[in-house]
Length: 155
Image (cartoon, rainbow, N blue to C red; front, side):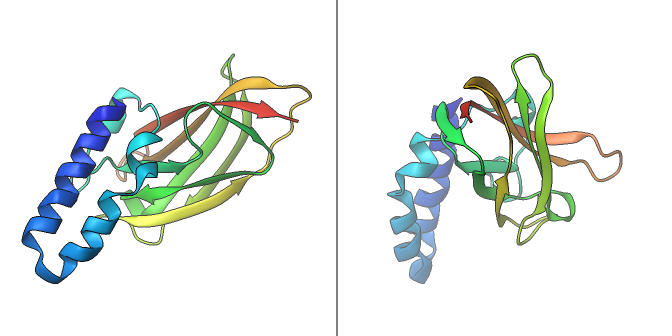
């Protein structure tokens, strides 16, 4: 799955570099950014839905997969989701909610925007958890573009 996201991103940026004239230089610089291709999180099957730019609806740039983190956890990425609302939650291995918060991307519903939020949590000892980042489908509110990032939480 990680390679697929990297391949899509590389194809998109190659297309920009080859056909966008003045924009080619900035697209070329973006294509060398390793964070988007080497630290892409493991996505659930619903993350296969793509936005108008061909990227997944949600792209989590930080934290990387299997990171060891303490509170507050900084979650950063881009999204093209309904009304720019991005839902972020941390769940324990048993599925219980550790922390949850919503934020807004700088653009949404047909355009890609950036988001960044601090997620505060408390755990008494190190434990495995999953960071889930997703949008909502406008008409029925069901989760879309779910990205799951396995993490280890530290007190």
